[in-house]
Image 1 (cartoon, helix red, strand yellow):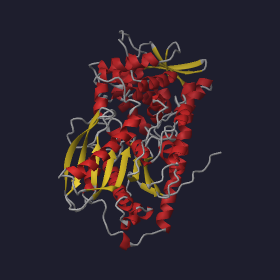
Image 2 (image 1 turned 180 degrees about the vertical axis):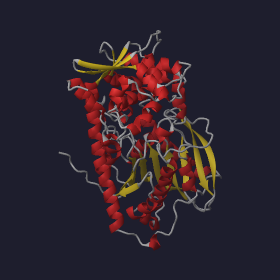
Image 3 (image 1 turned 30 degrees about the vertical axis):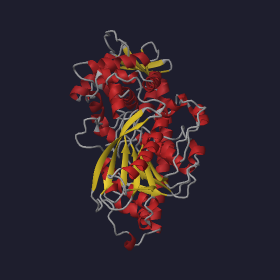
Image 4 (image 1 turned 90 degrees about the vertical axis):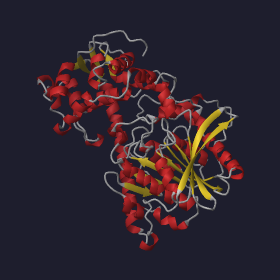
Length: 562
């Protein structure tokens, strides 16, 4: 390869970069990841096209190209021709099988599902971002071409694969803007580097605390991983909030004890349902907690299924930012009524001791109930998200801009005594001024490999904004946005996720959630101080396991980068 500007740019762009995960060819990763993002997202009626023949790499006035045939031949045979070999020589050979797998792996979505998502505001925003990098041969935005290619590939009887998406692109050539791609790569580099610095700081601090502040063996005699001694039964109740004309079910896990028990509410994430954390509900119930798990009808699995089936026009409504906390408040009101009128619930609920735990959108819900209001001024400033933002969760948070701002939304609940937010989205819809208003004990759980609600902007930095005296940050190293989500076996409403998306060892991540939640709620809701030692780095160090090492800190001061 000569020393022309395009050659230098390509060499720089495709060189292996350890700070980005060390997974080989960066430009190919950008292309594949960009299309892969589109696959989960959503065109009008598509006209037949011949499809792309070449992939052009553009840098200013200079351009190089590679034929789609070369990629296809390599994907099918594993043999690179002379044309492709010129590029692959810059790639770590150990990672080449990943390229073949990415090109050929079928994607379990059909044309209707893909189309429905790509026509939502979130889908169109993502397409617009992809269109800056992936363009037609004329250098026009690839917005419509990408959408067309995705839907045509999803309807092809040969299968919905990335290679097929390239083949369906409605232009003789696909142009990749290397200049813009390099900007994104550098932004990604900075974001990853800053996150790695913060993660290293958390891990080092947790390790030091485990070494310098050991807990006595006498105080750590319980095995919190094992189920407790209480049997329980599950009751399903159906609620109807007349003021909002909102119907939703809730599962209540009742320990079989003769005294009132503390109550924990679990709020599921966007596109999940009330079975997503059934494992946690069962674990807490076995230790004597009443666990109430509502279904949030406007942002649950049924809403996502309706979208993919063409029966809904949006991923979720902005109103869900209000309705979710109100669901929990209404549920608590209903449990108060049932505790007085129903033989099943009478004498079983201690509604003076209530905790809330939520994941993702449910993490936002938990924070709102804990006392953090929506910051509309911050939303106006942050939304729409900047073109260079790599924080996908902002697409969800910025939906709240459409909410009426003249209404005084009362989303907090003084009955809630402690809260846990797992992978919450909060940086722009709440922000520092909002999170500083939380006064109750709070734990934030984060996964370092979360690409939906990235750890640094959505959990680590927001943790440093908290002013409550009792605060904890638990970091699951290598955890993804989906690591802690469970679900019931054979659940017909469940939407399966690929193993690559969920990440390694989800059973271990769920075990961490069981232990952290139990120790936290026993300490701050049930008022059992003998569980306090289990909320220490020393104890966490004893249960931490590869491939998802766990760290815990109570104070964090992030270093300012020069």
